[in-house]
Amino acid sequence: MAFTLISTFINATIGFFLADMLFWILSLVILGIILYISWKKSMYSKLGNFILLVGILFSFFGYLNNFNPSYFYLLINLSAFFAVLYTAFNKKLLIILSWMLNGFSLGYIIASLRDLNLGIVFGIIIFLIGLRDAFLPKKFDEHLND
Image (tube, rainbow, N blue to C red; front, side):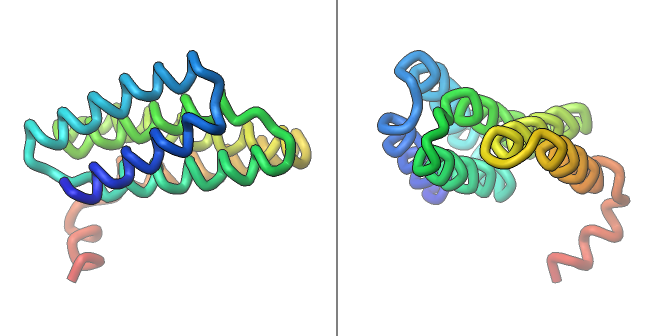
């Protein structure tokens, strides 16, 4: 729970300086719901926290390259929200939505900074890698944690 609090605080603080005010306020609502779910369920989502921190890192680098990261910031926070919901309720549709938004948002920022074709390819690759979370048997996944 402490790491969730830290990652949402960092995300909200840096997002204030990078994103437009409307997108930042919408993201604050999402971050608040993430904190509430984590507190209410007494759980910790590694994927959700990772997405929050990587999202703010990509937003920062996009901002340095004269790119407005507002849409990306909102989409990546929404992706973290679905990852936290998946951790809390264990529904496969939620992790699929999370990885779909991950692929779309990271593909969007790569397409905006570099090339459209490169963004599409990276987005599809990220989404397909993420499908592993939804369709990989849990027995195979358990030995990775040992």
